Length: 365
Image (cartoon, rainbow, N blue to C red; front, side):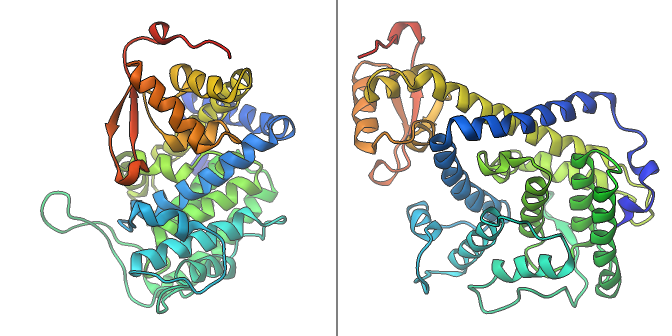
């Protein structure tokens, strides 16, 4: 709410370098429709891979982890009830339900307190309760990084939250309708204020990331369907928290600096668009030759230096796992790649390229 009281003060000192990044995001948004028309099969495969990565990463940021071998079953859509082994699996399934609610909506509901609490209820729908209600006790944002408990930020009280949260959504929706600032700036301000208010007893971070996805989709930034924003936040978790804390200083007084958080968010989104467009470009160049030749070309020329079978699967929808594993075995025998990390039954194996690409040039066949 504090960020929306005086928009001129909040957004009046935008860093010059941020303008180019916002322009890059708008270019990416403009290209999405073209890709959806030309490569629907690839985008469908990316969407499913991204869905699972987002569920896994957003929970992992909060320390909610499950056995990797259980992830496909827990992420699957099917009849309930499932047999959950522990609370972490129940919370994993809750995030699945909430993200699916957003991604599958043909018309996105306007952001409001009831809608946010609906998502929160889904988050904890498989636990013994606690979802769908605002906090009733004072909560604190603390750190144990230096070996002792340190209070980093004191959110508003439960009583203040009753007023601040509906005011936040009302001011955000009005600013969006008035085109008061660039959409990414408004989304960033919304999420910063939401996390400062910390309106629920548990799950504030996960709920904020769900609201981020909702707001991005509502404003036409659909990259979150095809590249996991949550995974990028998990990979840069220290920077994620540092940016939040830097922007929340003096938030209660309305004198906070929103730009560390906005620049972090814009950077995550720009990297996601770069990744998305690189995958599309790779798919276009890969779609030549036999399926085995396509796998070879991806591994040798397009895959990250360290990659997993899931990366190949996402880049080459329609190519079976046996074909992928056969090519990996051949490339390993040729000395082109090596196994970097062996997981159970090979499911989590991480591979790494060896030497130069030229040495292992593939041929079309």
